[in-house]
Amino acid sequence: MVVGLGIIKFRLHDCHSLKGKRKIVKAIINQLHNAFNISIAEVGSNDIHQRAEIGFAMIGNDRMVINSKIDKAFNLADQLGLAEIIDTEMELINL
Image (cartoon, one colour):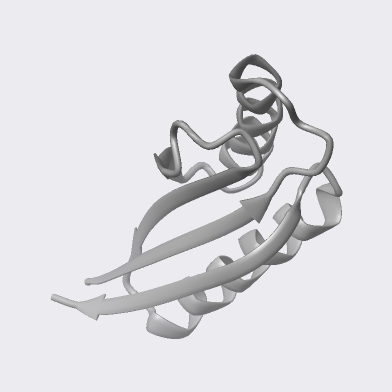
């Protein structure tokens, strides 16, 4: 069994309130969840208006498939164009 973890850090331009940030983050989370059926949540930078950190996890049998799906999730988050990606992290764990 392989567990894949991904973290995406965003910069939110022209976002001046937590309400505006929440709207953008929620849209990103919903799109990624619907596209990949992954467990996903905001995991950091909760009180900073112009930063967001989203973490997600997926489980499978094949390391290369999980790696590919995480890359596709990163690409989709970038293609949405809702926020600028400033950093991504990925970890694959064999159990």
